[in-house]
Length: 114
Image (cartoon, rainbow, N blue to C red):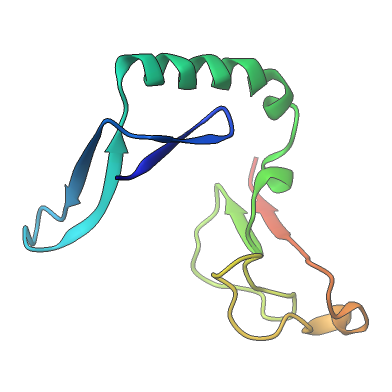
């Protein structure tokens, strides 16, 4: 059974549903847990409790990615700055560019178009 994250805890779902690719109904994109009405209410209450603090942080601080583009097209990339996710999405070494001296530094590049 799949689980939902509610107030920082993984909670067993009451049902499991499939996300089916509409252009190829044999392609199951993923499965996810359905929540009960009580679980949904708990998740909403937990989100309301932390929203004030969460909303005071920037998108750059919340993002867990090596490269973030906000309100900008994703085509093109500056290969002179480090790139790589902070988790399994990373590809290749992170010691590119001027950050070679800080080999293990996690750098987050963020482009923002207000």
